[in-house]
Image 1: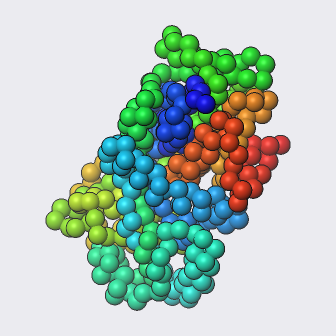
Image 2: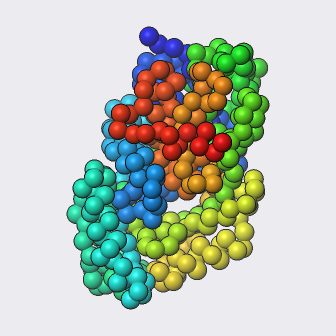
Image 3: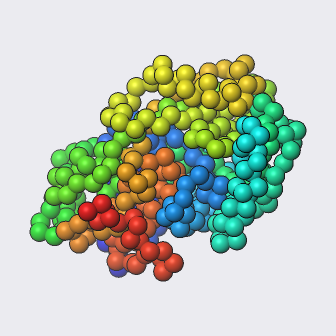
Length: 376
C-alpha cells in the first residue's frame, strides 16, 4: 500500500532513499537546503571496495553497496534520468618504492580473497610491471610495480545526484529546496514543515550529511557526526584520451581518476576538525597537487580547471549510521558516510527507504555495527 514519505537531505544517501521510495510507488518529497560544502556535490567516487584500505565491518556493507550500483544505473536509464557519471574504468594500485612493491603480492591475495567472497568490481586482477602501468596511465612516474584491477568503477557525485533527482520526479515525487522542520508527536514524526507547507508523513528518512546534529538534536537525540573537509581538484589535459585512463590509488589516502574527454581529478584532503568551513585553502591546494604530481608528474602541464570543496559527514569509527532513529518508530537514518559516501550512499539510502516502509534489512547483513546505539 502506497504511503506518504519525506526525506531530509538531498545528497547521495537522501536522493537514493527518495528514489527507492518513488520507484516503490510511494508519494515522496525530497527536501534539501543546498548547503555550501555538500560532500556529494564535490565528490568523485571510486567504486572498488575489494581494493580498499579499510578493514573490518566496512567490507560487508561495501560488498552490498558495490553490488547495488549496476541495478541502480539500469533503473535510472529506464527512467530517462540522464548521465550518472558511473563507468567501469579499471584501477592501478601502485607501489611507489621497493618496500611497497614487496607488499603487492599480499595486497593482491587480499583483493582476490574478497572477490572469492562475493566482492564486486574486481574481475581480472594481477600484478603488472612498471612499463605496463605507465602504458595504462601515461602521466605516471615509473612506479616500482602495480596491481591491475579490471572492473573497478568510478562515479561523479553531482551527476549521480542529479540523475537520482530526475528519477524521483519521473516517478511522481517532488524535490524541494528549503529548511525542513520535522513535527514530532510522541514516538512518531507526523509531518514536516518546509517553505510554509505542512507535509503529513507516514515515515521520514534523515540523510542530512555533515549537518546531521542540527536536525537530530531537535528530535531529541544526537549523533557523533562531524564535518571533515575534503579539497578536490579537476585538471584538463587537452588532446589526451583520458576516458581510457584508469583510477590510480595505492598505500595512501589520495587518488587520481579521470572523466572523458579530457578531465583528471586529483585529491583529496581529509581535514578532520575543519568545522563547517568550505574554503579552499593554500595548504589544501599544495597538499593535493604535490601528492598528485609526485605520483604522476606528467600532469604538471595540465590546465587547472576547477576546485571543489566538500564537508564529509564523518563518524569516529569511519562507519555509517543506519537503522531506526532512537525513540521514533517511523524515522530511519542514513548518515555518517565519511570519505566513502559515493560508494556506500546509494545502497544505504535504499536500505533506509526499505526500513521506513516496514521491510526488513538483508538477511546476509548484521546491522549491529552500523546502528547508532553502538556509540552508547
